[in-house]
Every structure is written in structure tokens, then in C-alpha cells.
Length: 175
Picture (tube, rainbow, N blue to C red):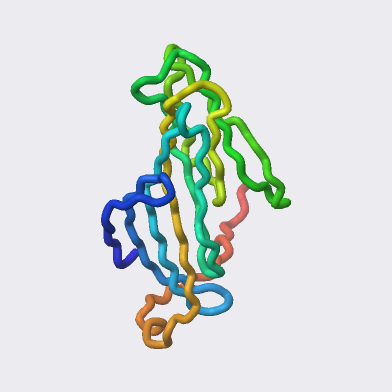
């Protein structure tokens, strides 16, 4: 991948961000495309004062957003009580669905790894029970696809040729 760069630290909608941009060229059945991936570390905190947080993005035709959750953990000041965190998102039929993803307790399970649990924004995180504070961390991936790829850039791309599959050689019969 070409053009890897790091951007400055920022803050967006309550999520802390650290950005990195990656660019690459992709050839599809519709012709050459320019694809840019932007990665941002993201995190928010739910507590008795902030019981919910909604992660929203601006909708664009040539952009796909994915929020990949890594970990939920109780932070300093948490009580030994059940802290249930719920995710509210839309399913494949565009119906709102609420799913509890964690039940954290300081004495037995203060953190939970979600192993890149992927969601498409908008996503709302709710502290259904407990007083927290619960920290949610993950990555926001933005994929921009631009099919206004010029002929000059197209000629610079490396072509990959695949060899056909050849049949296996047959050996003489066994006696």
C-alpha cells in the first residue's frame, strides 16, 4: 500500500481519534478505482452522568464507514456492581436492534475483549445498568472509493497475470 501517513490527534463526537491514511489502487470489473483507507483509533466513556453515546458519520455515496470495537473496560472509580453495556444499531432490514454486549463487574470481569466486533454507523452505546465508568475502545475505518482514476495513473499500476491451472501429469499404471 502506498502513501501511508499519520494525521494529528483529534476529537470527534466524543470519540478520541488518532488518524492514519492508506491509499491503494484497485481494479474492479467496472474499471480502475482509487481506494483510500483512513483509520482512526476511537473511544468513549459511559458513566452515571453520560449513560449513552451515539457514533454518527456523514453519509457519502463513495464512502463506507466501519466501527470495529476492541475492548470494554471499567475504569478508575468503578463500583463493584453489574455494568451492562448495550449496543443499538440497525440490522440488514434497517430495523433498530438493541443487543447487550457486556456485563462487567469489578470483582470478576472488569474488562471484555470484543475482537474487532464490526458495526456500521450510526451506533448508540448505552449503559443499561450500573454507574460505570465504562471505557469503550475501537477503530473507525473509512474506505473512500473514487472511480475518477486518470489514464496516466492507470498505466503506472502493476499488472498481475495469473497462470492457468494445468492438469496433473499422469504416470504409468501400477502393477
